[in-house]
Figure 1 (cartoon, rainbow, N blue to C red):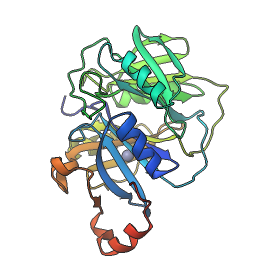
Figure 2 (cartoon, rainbow, N blue to C red):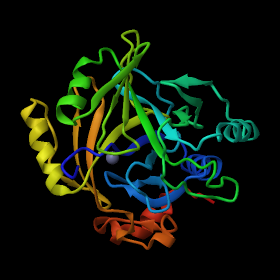
Figure 3 (spheres, rainbow, N blue to C red):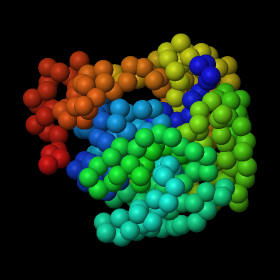
Figure 4 (cartoon, rainbow, N blue to C red):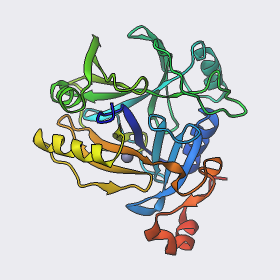
Length: 311
Ligand code: ZN
């Protein structure tokens, strides 16, 4: 399995206000805030990471909060829904909790025989909580209000909306070694057997959807997981051999990355397990202080002065 794509590594989205985003994900959803850093390409803005206790690949949701950025529209050629795995019988808890926090449940039902509820974050980002049919033994992060018996366990799936699923499906099957699992309506499910969880990509074919740009509440890219840099570079060759463009290896401090746009329009990333989130602070202190990459450390004072308060 070491040379394979190991499901989802992380998902990165755009938020309108840092504090509102921080409050929703840490308090309402009860995720652990695992890293507070800056956008390496725009160090006057944050880059937030949420996940499980240690920031395991497959649990990592990251945001670029840009204060006051206009809301985007979900459309074609983008990832349009994040699926979280939750424990059996926890949906009642979540429905009640969302009522208390004025989060509207948009939809509830079953997909591929799995129960789910759908809602949006404060920026309009679509999220779904799903009770998986197959056991999910991952340990959710526990807070005062969200205990382990109801806590999210990490990603279940990512949904991409596409004008036509064919070429994207080919990337999943021919390069990433995913297999077609089944179809429900216009939803085509692909799954990898390389990992037990975070292994699903749903492709929704909807030619009526327009291509839209990124804005608040939209997903910027989906990162797939590989074990290390050696595997990463092997996939770089595979992507190039398929005729697609791909970046050089990029050091993201907590993982190494490659980016390429799949033919359906969605930005894909490949990201390594190493070195992980405890490279610059101990696990017990993850997310507690602002972490800057070496190139910005000398500008710390100026950066801290312009970043919005989370208090
Ligand atoms: Zn990324």
